Image (tube, rainbow, N blue to C red; front, top):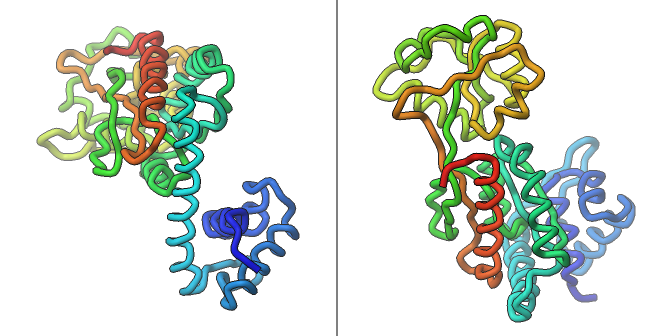
Length: 300
């Protein structure tokens, strides 16, 4: 019996999720079918790839080594498909786009409409997750491109800066008439930020603590929506990207204020592997993302 790309993809799903049920769901097959494929793969190799135990699954030492080479083969196979798609000169079929959570809810509605109108044969596969995961999935070939805050500064990726957006201050509605605090005053307030792992948290902290100590009181939230609702309840203040204002503040008792110049801001861009055969088409996609961002009022 020979190894098949299908078996390698099933094994990659299992290694990624470390759970037969979740891996089977991701692979769109039944759990018994996935288990059978993994066992057949192990029989072909003559070595175990995974250690099976109740409520726990880990790769064997051989499985870890095998995974590295399996992912490389799968990435090359995907690039062969991409090469054929690129040679046809048209974007059609599956396009896997990753996007960070502080951009996705606001950009995607307009972006999906534009992409489906411009590329009707495109099958969009969207994934919303944090920057480190996007970078890892893009490097491993599980994504074709990612929309996130720049710079990423990874030599394997091409970066295209698309638009910039400022951060605004969100505070309780009762504070609407008060002066906008500067960095020093902001450090003395209870500042609500996204939890660790969000790049927007780091960007907000960079603005608040430049050349000085961190804010005195910090509280974490899991989403911008949670932060804004906490502000509305009088718990503190927060910073959010301007793109999020129409969505996140419409049902909260908060006021929004712009900071004086120089305003805190970030650059949103798109990245993809430099080796991707789809690079010319991905540059076209990047222009569509740019147009969707500018339509929301972002700066060029």
